[in-house]
Amino acid sequence: MKLARYTLGGVTTIGAVAGDRVVALTELDPSAPGTIREVLAAGPALLDRLERALADARSGVPLADVKLEAPIPDAQKYLAIGMNYHDHAEEAARAGIPVPAHQLWFNKQVTCINGPFDPICKPKVSDKMDYEAELGVVIGRRCRYVSVQDAASVVGGYFVANDVTARDWQFKSPTFTLGKSFDTHGPIGPWITTADEIADPHALQMKLWVNGELRQSASTGGMIYNIWEQIHELSQVMTLEPGDLIATGTCANVGIALGKFLQPGDVVRVEIDRLGHIENTVAAESV
Figure 1: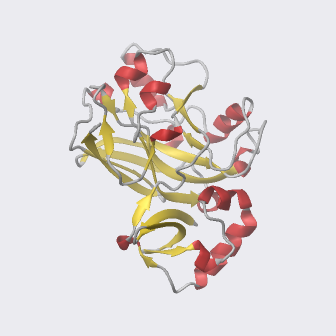
Figure 2: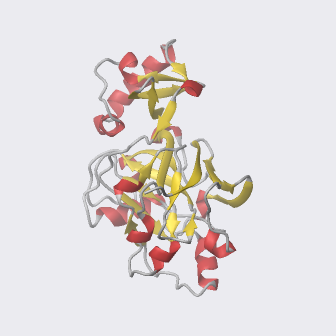
Figure 3: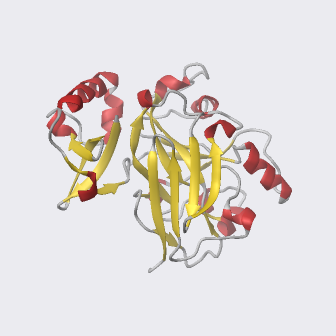
């Protein structure tokens, strides 16, 4: 199931995508919760009930008529792993950046979360705004000390992400958080594709274009640490909650490696097989 958050006629709601239309969850089940976080937390029984109702539904509105919003705007955590693709680690090493010996984690502050088609702002204080195509994971149930073998059972679904980065801010601090957390620098979506629809999240093609020019293209099988290893690592430290977001790393040919940083007017599109795409235009910061 594809769970979307969308606005129509000034009202924002959540629904299920069926082809080229979206059906409000309350039309499928009047008792359905009001947020995707709560839907995921409710577990498989609710998702199965909604799936059955969606198969018989004849209602809904065209996707073309709605504005898709960030599916989970109120995540408690947005965690991201650095240099987690072999080819990206290699390009970093060529630039003199040491490859970490262990999983390298940082926060994207949740105030960066942005809609799948909303503008991303080039900060007035940064000249090195970059893109990073990433497969996103959303946690589906509360968990701690999850084994690698059991990690798949706590995944609620997947989404497309762009880990927008201000490189100058990223590298002026021992931690990446500031450079990864500017407002609007966390576009996600276009919806949450529930885990049952993706047999192997490590066998998806991921691509990114800037102004129609293909910049990044790789299989998610190129990860150094797979998703299950990532969840295991994080859960040793903290309790993971439904709706927590994880960005699983980017592949080679980021802007800093090519000497091509984002500028106002640029259009960045990220697409992942079976998950859809997001597309964001770079705007000059107005504040």
